[in-house]
Length: 220
Image (cartoon, rainbow, N blue to C red; front, top):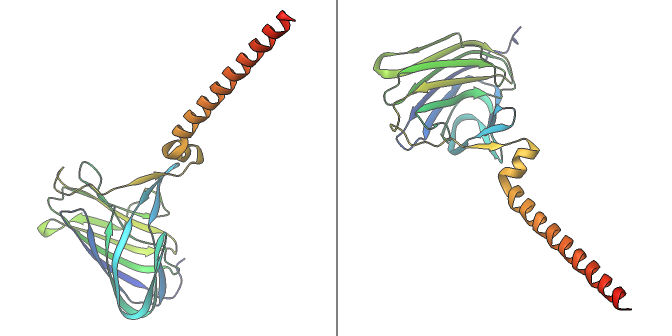
């Protein structure tokens, strides 16, 4: 059951040729919105987003953190920002419309404009869930539209659209999160190679030292 505090959100976004997305978020408030910049996409990988040019008009304030943009609304306000990291190779655009609220949302309405959208999918719920939004469609003028009636605090809404390959610059970036995979994706392989070389050199030195000792004993 959603809380009685009524918080409604309307979000409009446009995807540009360089793969960036400009976003405008209208909130009735009060609430706190934490926009995560690292989102799990599998058991051992995260999608990395960057947010810039954040501006808030109305009641509230913005705090930029290393892995999130936190916006505290104390009343009705409008947030605008630019996000990078949503466009994958092949023209698949995954835009994290919203998520990380400390209050339940009563309604969410979102639009996304991009060149040549052919398919629209919208997912709501916990990160990684495949539950569809209340409503989504490809509207007039080739704009994706989505609605979600009721979103629990902490849950998210993702809007996924397909555009022609090459229509947008690919900006998506993923990083390894599993310790072993992260180790080998980073300095792991060079470090292992160095350790193998050092171990081999040590073994060769011990072998030669043993041979030298045996020759000395044989002459005695």
